[in-house]
Length: 101
Image 1 (cartoon, rainbow, N blue to C red):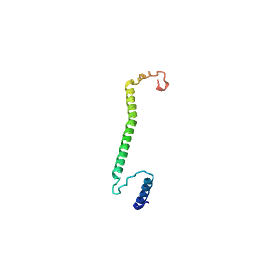
Image 2: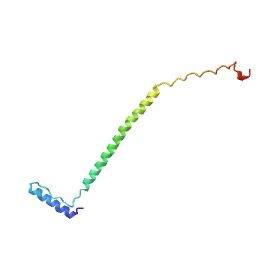
Image 3: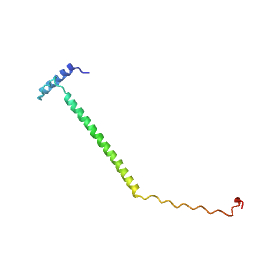
Image 4: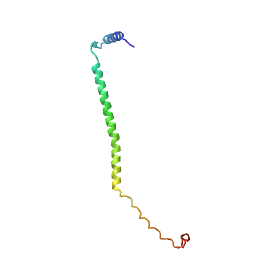
């Protein structure tokens, strides 16, 4: 792991190389923290995740909702099935030998 001293030394070397190349790099103030920048990045990432999840939920449930509505409409538009009339009781069999007659 790089210590703060090594990091500052390498950063100074890079700044010196850039100055030699004619690129002006303002010195970084070590007392300033990038915590605000990190917080903004984290907030942006959380916001994007919430928007993505909300949109995904809305669009996935939209299809299922339409499917349910059309299913209910088709059931209400279709008349109920017609039951065939029940057959009357058959007449008694007079020639049945088991009846004892």
